[in-house]
Image (cartoon, rainbow over all chains, first blue to last red):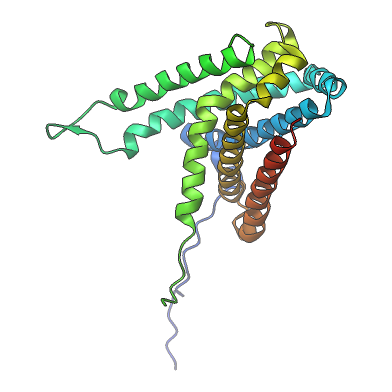
Length: 136
Length: 119
């Protein structure tokens, strides 16, 4: 009589729920942070449309301005701003994790690496805003 | 010549990383002004003439070119990974890569063309 093994070896295939990102807050935060990319693409396209409208003349630019006033458009852009802020905060807080930072053999505090980014962000925003508002 | 296949990760990561900084530094103020404050009338919209004068400056166009290009590639890379990881679309990796990076290349070409034809 041939001896059959009682158990057959099978490759381990972990089962993952389609909604795995809802299992833990950390997973959801990861999924939300990565989803910011869709809004980055969205607003880049909006900016392309704006440049095209500017080139096409005042009538087209008025259409663009009217388009941006649609309630749905404003809602999408408010959501986009939320995602951009999430992206900015997580991105700047990532810097201390990827740069080598030591003073006298001791690692410097995280805030020393991330804080300059927040300052550059603030400065860049003010400068861009002044240009856009026509102050310069 | 070595037949070893070279990874395209460094170039993709360079574009993704740089785009991440551009998106974090500059996009919030753009969407806050053009997407929220001007349409709602919270701030006075400088209007067509002022905005066109701004766009006519070569450095502004260079800025917009860099912003749009890096942000498009940043978004493309992250969208590809988000779709394949979060929505379990890993089996469509080749199509996703083609669509995402192809879209970023198309966006870049659009940006170059639009910024070049500004009157």
